[in-house]
Figure 1 (cartoon, helix red, strand yellow):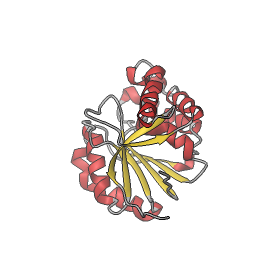
Figure 2 (tube, one colour):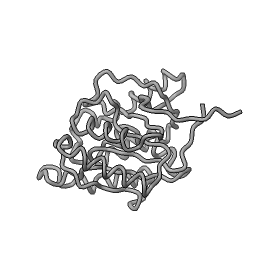
Figure 3 (cartoon, rainbow, N blue to C red):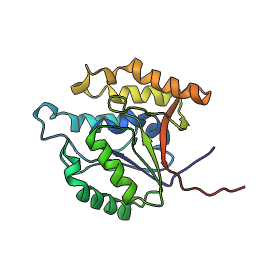
Figure 4 (tube, rainbow, N blue to C red):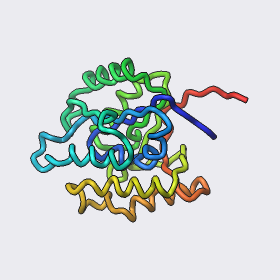
Length: 210
């Protein structure tokens, strides 16, 4: 199956989410279409995470995403459920301004309150648009990829390199390069190809054409 988006929107709750969930795919397509990467919280209210905003920008640069295609929202980590309406309105403005036709956001199997909230609001704000959910291994339970996208070994390596920009999280198990590669190998095995990133299907809007 071939699929394409003229304007592809990647949504993450926190710095690192987009890279962890679909960094290889992002690298694979960044030169082929218009992308916008939006992270709703920059985590700067946490004194232990003061470097992650800059690390995110460095990580995105490794993936080929220029700084002008990276945006941060105004929301506060861990309390997204208290800002549902504001997040919805933020997404509605994104829809009006960017006009995406393909969106990647957190899986509905993600139990982190921020991830879960923003996915719910994305599905409300972007009605009528294809939405696919990515997995962040630390907080997803019961995730199984029903939509598998082939990625090259170069993109796999770029994802690993991008995640290595996060000195803040260097000791976290979910930043381990072997784990990162093994997930893409496993998803590739499900599709009988060398490497893939996997998503759950939140909504697909399509046209069958000959």
